[in-house]
Image (cartoon, rainbow, N blue to C red):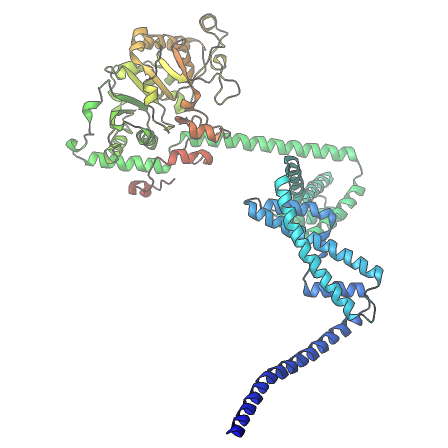
Length: 623
């Protein structure tokens, strides 16, 4: 028993010994294998490295293959500022991208500086010899990796410091550098165009019918350069062959210079060419102005289509189906009454829609639309199909005003502009006769858009004045006018009764106190001025100077925020002023429903018209 127990203990101890020794042997064998393979690979790499001719270039080539350092052009000092400007320009949207772009740029600089410094130290100390030293090489590579990590950390800190301490002057300097770099990007394009001009000038010196070799060469060069430049606006648009063609053109111009050495004749020729170009520009400008005014006086095809379709639909209805709702409100003086005199269907619709959309008490709104007999059915049918909610619409035709005087001299004006000859434009001087039961009325031009609730204007105290309007007497402001700009103050009658320095105001959004109007009998005063103006020139054509005379000293000037002008001709109206105004006015010829409208302002008008309506789609009317 004792012997068997002894053998059992011995066997167990042997098994334990084997379980401990076997893993150690296996690991030792594996390490020896790996070490021998690694040493062999390293010696192969070292042998290929030591056989290179230049040790410094060798380590740079090795780094280029493994670390993929940036190209040499990145590190040129004269290009570094423009690189910074380019990075700032491309990563200006967010602070994160800005910091990232600067971090990458600074990291490249630090890596280059560290590599350069390391190479110089290695060359001075003789670390890299033809034989090479493995330990020194390993130490150097490790040092380079540590320096790379340290430079990246320093870069992160530098980015934070620069982002926090960037001064406005530094930013302005970078922006000016960027603008300068942008200005020179079309230098080659300008040189090509200059060469073409010079070549044409030399062709002008040749006698008529000349077919010399030089003239043929210049004509050929001009064609080549015109094809090379094409529609290019910057140097990057040019092809590679363009630079070679520039050299050929310059050689041909040198020949022409030797053939025609007279500088005086060349200067005279260039002046003549410049004069002809200026005349062509003036002619094109005059033609463009004429076409714009013609477009302003022409009814767009889509609007004509819409008017014809609605007119046909109107006459297809039975008389009892043509009634508009809320007819009992049109004579109630306690409500808010708005008047629009227009023959434009879409314009009237936008005025009504914008006013109703921004009103707080829609049920108190009454709109009086006065038009001519031609557009009366279409406008009536439009509001019958598109009623303005709780508001009331009243449509009238000017032909129904039997009391309207037939001797209006504005029909005799020598003008084809409907703004000056249309009777609808002069109906504003007959408001008490058109609305005999009303005490107040707010008159809109059809090219306005209402952006705020106007109940505050209805509650304004006019202090005995007849009309409330926004002043235009601020010099330098939009629609600035002096009275003597449109009225003839050289006439004694005008000079004795009116002040040329009096503050002027604008039509387009005006509140009238009809009771005060009747008390002063201003319609009769208007007729008096109208008759005097028909006999001698007292004012420029239009209703505005007549309004200044008729309502002189009877106008309450409103705050400018009630009515912003200039959206039909001035491209520089402040966006903040537009968005903060109660009413915006497209006065001028670029109306928002025309193709010549200013695009930056048109959305303020189109937002109040639903262009998805089937009838608008059929007439191809789009926003």
